[in-house]
Image (cartoon, rainbow, N blue to C red; front, top):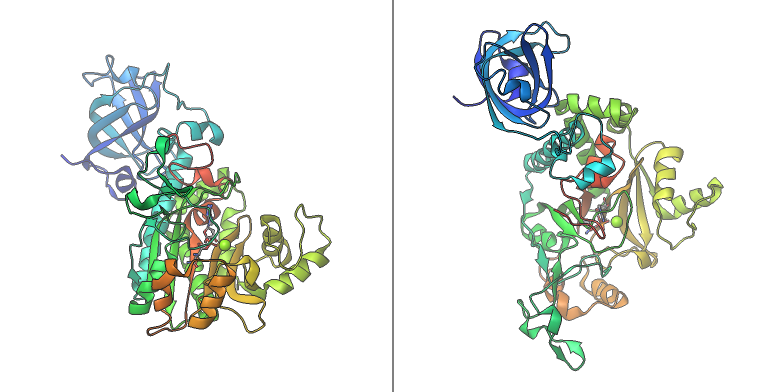
Length: 463
Ligand code: 4AD
Ligand code: MG
């Protein structure tokens, strides 16, 4: 007999149905009447299935009475109406097979609530907690919704490479990929000689799939990539990972205004999907993690994002009189505290900042006529700060060449990128959504390390 998932049973199974369920014991409670209640969870939903095992079962004394938190079991029996509140049905077991024991002396995940910091040290067990169960289901539902959104709009999903020879963001925060012997690095004229390396040249893990997505946008019009990206920035914050997932649409025949509209529609779509499809999990977060979560999510879906130029934002921040930790001055990057002030306190809505100083943005962003700014956008959310970064791309060959020189990039490394501007160039734009930051936002989780299964951060890659 195939097993039925607990989610399915709780929603669909009618009393009288015979089913088999498999999962992990959350708790066991024994009643004086000679039977036990086993709370079983299989990850398919937040709720457990209550399994009633009575002393008639052949292994009742030998096994059932020894079941502890974390053990895995399969139970077969009849679905019956539940007298208990909060659950429609329960399972009256006719057989319970213990598949794997969990010694309570050493099993680290006991019933009591553990701190999120402790759970990070047992990333192999934390998926079995309510919190990580809910995070995982939300992450899964969001991933699917991302593909649905673009698929419904005729975008092609492109698999851009993980190993690259270019630095898209130009920030030099890359992990080198090499097979050169580290204990004896070959050198030529005092420099590392990469000719004998696997690819015959220096390569890195990608920081963004954008440049390759642009290539495909110049053939398919609308494309997107969704994959892992890597940054060797030493940022030990609650919003940074060294390995994170990014969604990057790229659209030909598109300007910044259209780019921003797609981004706003996209974010609202994703949040609506989560509100609809992950209701129980969101209620859990709303109760235990962030009291205002549902109100905030509903507010974002119904609010109009506020668009304003970087220059105006700097003026606002200076006039705010707030004692920020970091200085505010035209030409400097905004910090999370500034971004949050704008989205949380001033506008009380997501903010789309546009037209940033060219000196703080990468080479590919389109230069504005003022000679000082580029056609860029950052979307700022409450709590999180920057959740999306994007821009219109520089499609003019000569201007791009100048910009590359200004950013001290080696033209030879980007010959293929330049050719896109030489043959059939077209205005185009795109953006990158930090997927893990989005999961953080919709769950209310305070630390980004708690929304990805195995976080990679400075000094930490245990699993
Ligand atoms: O603003 P970023 O650096 O933009 C790009 O990489 C562009 N190539 C995207 C594009 O236009 N196609 O990164 C995009 C988003 C940020 O807004 C942020 O949400 C997220 O990626 N992000 C990070 N998330 C987690 N950990 C990190 N270290 C992150 N760095 C950026
Ligand atoms: Mg950015």
